[in-house]
Amino acid sequence: MQNLLTAFGRAFSSLLQPRMWLPILAPALLSFLVWILLTVFVLQTLAGWLLDVPPFSWASAFIALWFAKLLAFIGGWAAIFAVAYLMALVLTAVFLLPVLLRRIAARSYSDLALMGKDSFVGSTMNSLVSMLGFVVGWIVTLPLWLIPGVAFLLPFLWLAWLNRRLFSYDVLSLHATEEEWRTLRKKCAWPLFLIGLCFAALAHIPLLGILAPTLAMLTYIHYGLEALRQLRGGAVMVVAQREAENKT
Image 1 (cartoon, rainbow, N blue to C red):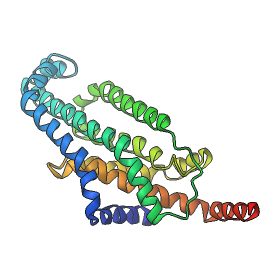
Image 2: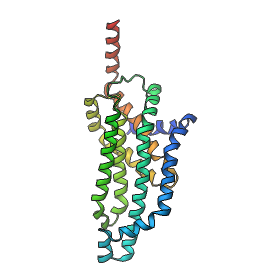
Image 3: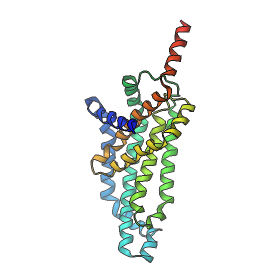
Image 4: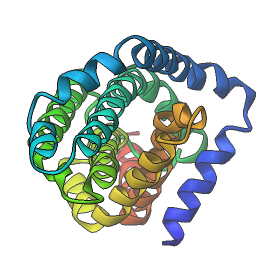
């Protein structure tokens, strides 16, 4: 828990640096613009279409029309929000994360040796698989929306899963070996999901939510690199230094 609180504190302290705001706001503002446009021009049509497909049509036939309309409106809004949020996540993960990861690692985690792989292909594949899993899972679990309360819970859980899946791998791919990554993924499974859940909740707050992808990324960077530092206990850096001394 202490590592989790430390990661949150370090992530928010990064916002105090003026040069961080331009890269942080760029994907957020683009996502916000897409969200506004889709809400104004698409939401009503999308909600009407959802009324004709299960499980919303089932709710209309067997429960009540007003309940079906409510579910359809919530579903349409959630879908539009998911599209805008996915855009912000992709922009953050593909373009912003590599830059800020190197900057933060050089400044605050310079003792960590680079033992992983700087693979654009691997990162891109992780992003594509994560988004595909999110979309498929979101669609497959639509019938569960008929259960009271599930319609409000599922969007948070799927966004939490997506945050964890997308960022936890990318922030460690450059520094951690495959064995270290497997160890951390198992050891830190709950904290990594909890970070995703916190920012999934933040994402649903108007205006402030547009910063959720970037704040999630910063928190995952600090938590992941600190967890790797503790896992190594400085041993990897010592070995690297000794090998360098022997070569000289």
